Length: 125
Image 1: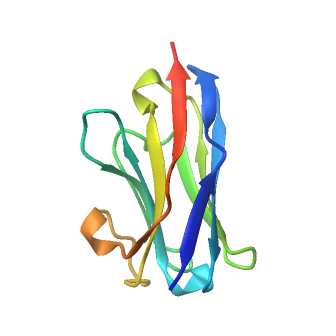
Image 2 (image 1 turned 180 degrees about the horizontal axis):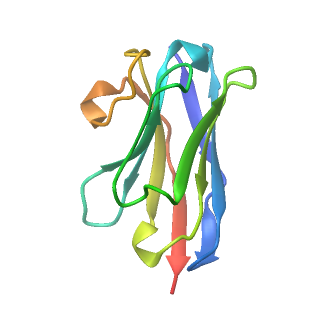
Image 3 (image 1 turned 45 degrees about the vertical axis):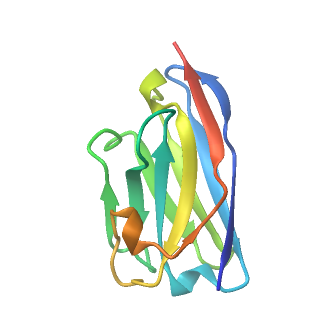
């Protein structure tokens, strides 16, 4: 199995950028599709972005399309989420996840098999 750890979260002002990283260990991340999800206080976990094992297939939530970009460096066993033009409503704990459905880019949490502990992103207005 694979272990995932997110990093790169923090407190930023609206309009700023952040890059989240998700480092995998245990197994190579190239064996999995990967996704980013987020959960704000009092809300359900929601899909943000996902990529197939090669990165050739990607999906984005409408709320982040054009602002966020998911990428992966399989050689470094790392997945990234570049977040630009951040808004206060992007405030949440961000989780990366890995799915054995590696040819696809799943958008639902139930399709994912492994999860990281999360990293907090706070965007002030």
